[in-house]
Length: 418
Ligand SMILES: [Fe+2]
Image 1 (cartoon, protein in one colour):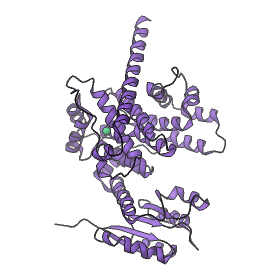
Image 2: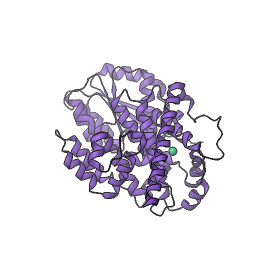
Image 3: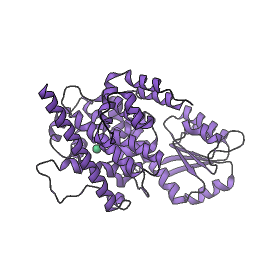
Image 4: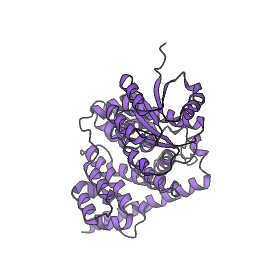
């Protein structure tokens, strides 16, 4: 039997005392991690040139080469490495300059067990996005999109000191198919708009720029990857994505940043399905085996036919685009949350719970639905959420689906009347 290869972890901190305490705290991990410790950036870079590392953890404020400069160099040489800042400094200039090169930020002091948990999770996500079967599928899809163009332009426009609304609307409208999808999703009852939005400017006015940015991202990916031959129910897909996004964001409403991530991940959580549909081989078998079955049944078919689930493939795609780890995780583990070990409510938990509730509410319309069944929420997530919250979200989902169905009926009868 061959032992799994040890993961290579490199720590950089100018304070020897901190390095010593890390050595002691992480001793028990020596069997699975090969760890190196350095007190200056130049030595760490020289070591990385000889032997790369899978994960790099650095302090921020250091003499000579600071953490931001170090991570910039590391990113250039080892773009696939996981880069984490472990720092006692609160928000300051250096922190801001490191953001493009760091995947995560951990504040000092952090308990050893917590540090091990964070590094373990980061390594698992990195493996998924860089060396798994899911990654192979993503990179072999001929239609592999680069990080969507309109989304990139929109992100740049929103980062300006003064955001120009005309520019934002112009960017979204530049691609009519994307703009149509954004409007379709905005008009779902889940967004609770007072009336149907007919154009992007109105939708921006009611929903705000961040929400529109998330919708544009999802719409652009969906337009790029969605099959155009009617073989896949795209409307259902969009409805489920929108509902999951809203419920997940609601679960994290008290933390605006986490809520935004959960909203994005909710919109994109099943994007791996669209990638699988582009993978050529086994697609007709996949569609046939999954038709009319609940979502959980799709997982078995995906593992059998493709060797990876749509959740893993979706996570790998977002990882290839270099999107934040917590977004990648929320997508990659939405069916398998307990593999992540989540001690508190976070985007991955929120998306898992929201998806389970949405899928349960949609299953109600199936003939073989068992009224006594509950949403399939993992034990780990159930420990973080109470029954009244689940019931509240289920009611919200039920009412919004019913309102959307009524709108659709009204549309159908008015077009018949014309
Ligand atoms: Fe899914």
